[in-house]
Amino acid sequence: MLSINADRLKKSVLELSKIGYNETDHGMYRWGFTDADMEARRWMMEQAKAEGFKTFMDGAGNVFFGIGDYSKKPAVLTGSHLDTVPAGGIFDGALGVLAGFEVLRSIKENDVKLAHPVWVVGTAEEEGRFGGMMGSQAIAGVLNPDWLMSAHDADNVYLKDAMAAHGMDVMDALDAAWPPERLKAFYELHIEQGPVLFQKEITIGAVEGISGVFKWIVHLKGKADHAGTAPMNMRSDAFMGLADFAHEIERIIAEDGTDKTRITVGKVDLKPGSPHTVPGEAVFTIVGRDMSNDVMKELADSCNKALSAIARKHRLKFEYEQVSWLNPQACSEKLTKQIEDKAKARNYSCLKMPSGAGHDAQFFTEITESGLIFIPSVNGVSHAPDEWSHWHDVEAGCNILFDCIINSAQ
Ligand SMILES: [Zn+2]
Image 1 (cartoon, helix red, strand yellow):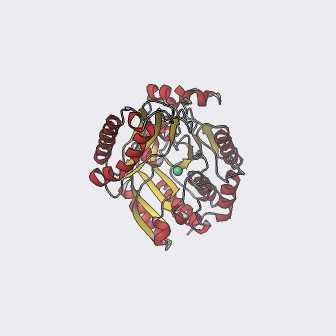
Image 2: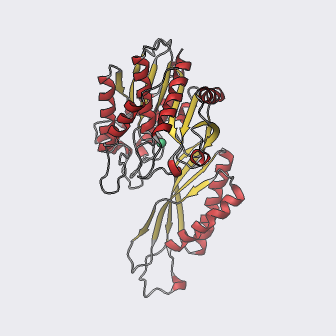
Image 3: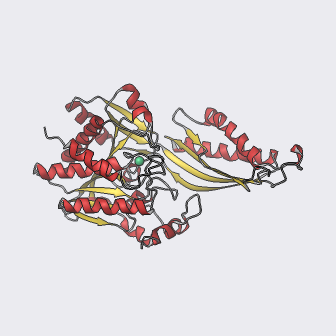
């Protein structure tokens, strides 16, 4: 049985982890379409080119490299994202791209004869700075001009401007769609980003589906008053509204959610933001997740009702903008089974499991058979500088990716 070169893969992971690395907090900073993000894309293309693979970047900023001509025969595609959240870890996304790179190198080195082309993609803007998974959405052909022009981040930087800063035209993302007949299958290797595999001491996760996610930006508007002269009962304190909502989250999940539901308020801005002034406005994000679209709708509805009631109680004006809504997606049963079989063949322990986090693979399910492979995250930590996965698990995951790709490309 052929295996990948674990040392070579490790070397690539460590090299990419230098791009966007922050000395102070030891986190990765490759937020979508920042300089570091674009530098990582150029680095990836240079690496692939140096190995003799064909490379290109599409209009959405996705980086591709591979072997074979997919205009003649459908390709087996693998990959993940190259961008990171601010202060992220070195494996989230990068692992899937570099494991694909390692698989290509192993195919070439061992002169594996395949009937289908094998390509790797490093997708753009997966972490949702602009409220979606832009790169894989572009490939799946689900973007539209209106969204592209209006997409902006939580600091009101527009996607079109962030791309223009790198000489890119946001509308070119519409040219990045792949016709389904060009694809045979898609695989993604990713760290679990949760504690399940690590706690159960299981090496491989065969993912059966990915939870959906919605993101809101909420405005609660009251009145900024002098913190000394405004009596407590005459205030319209926006923070009090936010605090009340925070306490409602548990009830909303108990009434309308499931054990897979997650609701998070992750970013809060109080205005004017002075210690001696009653907050006149609270701007905050709500991110909700579940494996069922119907449950997500009920959760969203309950958040809306709770915030409306809270706003009345505190004499606030309530508005929200739904920045994104991604439906839950099922992975291919056939490929999930294949991942389990390949793990068994290598004597790796394996667990069939759902994914609580969104991944590029969810958009590929719309255009081709998709499989998602997890490896354990130490202590379940991710989106943080202390995110880690053991090298022996990285090797195991890449071997399963290798086996699955060869199987599908034969
Ligand atoms: Zn990721």
